[in-house]
Amino acid sequence: MRFQVPQFIEVEDKIFGPFTFKQFVYLAGGAGIVVMCFSILPKFLAFLVAVPVVALALALTFFQVNNKPFVFILEALVKYVMSNKLYVWKKDQKAVEKKIREGRSYNEVVVPKLSQSKLKDLSWTLEVKSTVGNTPTAADEDQPSTSSNWDDKLKSV
Image (cartoon, rainbow, N blue to C red; front, side, top):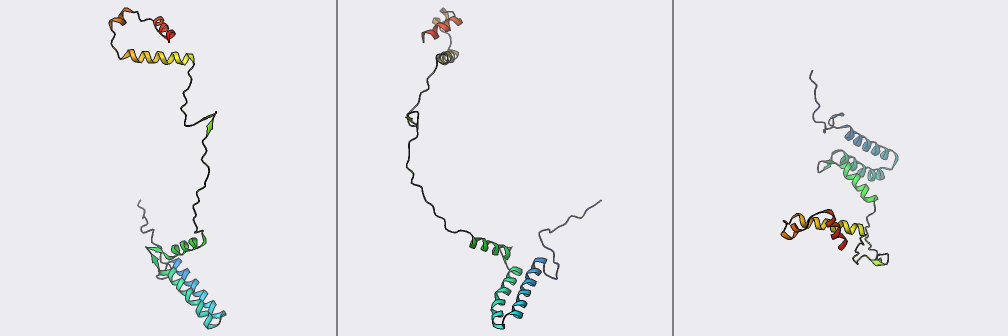
């Protein structure tokens, strides 16, 4: 079974002759306002009001800027007029304070204190790393490598 896929979905349908529904509403609305102006107001005043209304209706119907309808331009104009346009940058003149924690400023180097057990672990790690890459020498072969030997070295530290 074949289905027909719609094409040109971005193009609005022409409903009222050569006009789309939006274009027809813009023209009909402009014509209705002009008719009301001429029926209610004196002819001279109605003419002064009708000219801008007709111009707006024609612009909304036919005028495009960068292939966008005039209604988008009009919307951007209204947003611009209604929004704040004064941008002021004020730098706060706050006093620069050195933050002090426990009586020391952050600029000082703080050396952490090691407990006895952490110090032993660190010294053992350093000795293991230093002896792993080295080849055994004659002096190292004379001494047996037992765990008690390591404990003696740690006690001397």
